[in-house]
Image 1 (tube, chains in turn cyan, brown):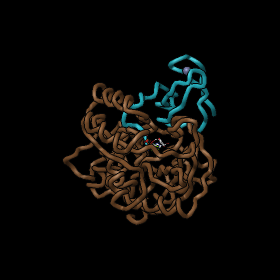
Image 2 (image 1 turned 120 degrees about the vertical axis):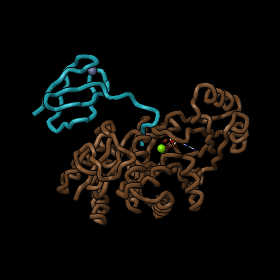
Image 3 (image 1 turned 45 degrees about the horizontal axis):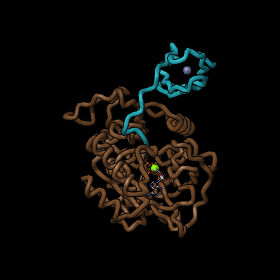
Image 4 (image 1 turned 180 degrees about the vertical axis):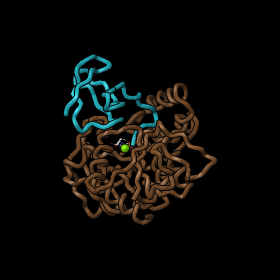
Length: 57
Length: 292
Ligand SMILES: Nc1ncnc2c1ncn2[C@@H]1O[C@H](COP(=O)(O)OP(=O)(O)O)[C@@H](O)[C@H]1O
Ligand SMILES: [Mg+2]
Ligand SMILES: [Zn+2]
């Protein structure tokens, strides 16, 4: 079942798909900010960590 | 069979991998690098954040977006005799463009002319030696960040001064390459266990073609030449699961640009028709079986 949660940046309502996972990154369709799902039950999100210089492939 | 995946967080790739593992009937433990708190003096029988002993894992798949965390974790696990994908040795070479250049050179694999210098004066000399345009890159880094195409001595001076003044010591290693006049694209080939499973062209108006920077992906046929150079490049860095950046020069010759050890592939299965996540899982399971 899809759940909804408010974007911590712009307050837009976000649809979190049924197959969402803990620690998954999602982006807000309204403001584009990257968010991380911290917990599924209860559904909690926060801003994803900032990209660091050593991040990549 | 026990498998763990080390992650910084779950991106599209990790989600695809977990789905592919589930289809193979395996549920790996997902271990977040932020939860790591390892006793370096004790051994592999200590508990991982999953609650299992590290020594219980037949194979650990390292998928950290944080290169430094991934590298240290591979070093620890390999020291403990735990099999990882990729190996620490391979990751250490691939995460450092200078080490990659050396490994390719030793193996006789074709690559752009590349020099290193450590001071502004000698960096200027290195740039003049490879000629304009030259490319300056950090030896560690990804997603096309902080690359510079240097077209003349004025811009060379400016970039060197900026790096010297604003950068930390990492940016005082001047890795200088000749610019390869490629045809508006480069090639990203995926090599798993010595097999070139598929490749994409990354096309862009910009000379930096990373998909993270807006390059668009389309299927690239695996010619015998491409397969050959990719296999030799993969072997040169110790093999495993690798994504190889290949440049075509103006004569159509292939040159290896760099090799990535924690590849992104979310945009590459659709154009190639190859289920990359399934291929990764098949390889991981084969590696785990060797141990189990
Ligand atoms: N010497 C070069 N000549 C031409 N293009 C280059 C050269 N080096 C890098 N590029 C372009 O820049 C992109 C990123 O460079 P790369 O060395 O792969 O760094 P990163 O680790 O950031 O991906 C390449 O995919 C290619 O499009
Ligand atoms: Mg690259
Ligand atoms: Zn938002």
